[in-house]
Length: 260
Image (cartoon, rainbow, N blue to C red):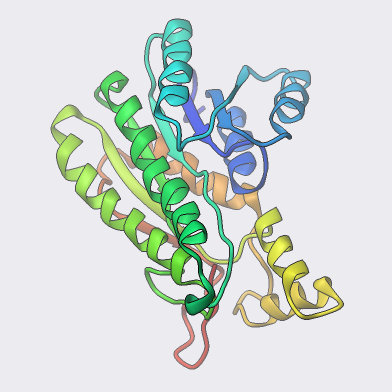
């Protein structure tokens, strides 16, 4: 299996895209530590262990460097190394630019940008040749944007720049760094956007999003997980500093595009 016995840390792995990544990594033989501060963390870990997988959960706010350090140390004490880091944890709260408070701005910056920075800085010293970092950026901010997404788009564009800069710094250590740019994936974040819309029928909002995608559907968390697993594996041994779009073709049309 492509990730057999690789030691992986996945942030935000208790649900959504992170859970899809965790499930696929486990399927391919990885031993996974989930860093999350969601109330679903323990439930997710328990369910995966019942399926026979080797997985641990650490209650970590990636804005807190000390919490990260403690959790990373626990992983190192158990396994002695980290082969894969997936910086998946992220937030999105859509507000018009002039109504975006400093608190909302900093909420995005502190988790999406600084959290990714904090995790990478804590884990890289324990990585060796053949290790891989996978950062979750987005088509939003890097390729497209809608109203209300200024804070979110800014942070996701920053993740792409971070990916390239870090890739250049750690390539001589044999560490690869790549980014995934998802379009619409069916996650709790998308469900929340639909519920927060002006529509009385969130399902119709999701259907409308799907109709704007050439493949006429949203992606699944498992499909995103498969891409992350490839980038984390030795199959991607000559890939670094790159970005990979997974969006069902949503950024393809010249006349209309959608993205989150």
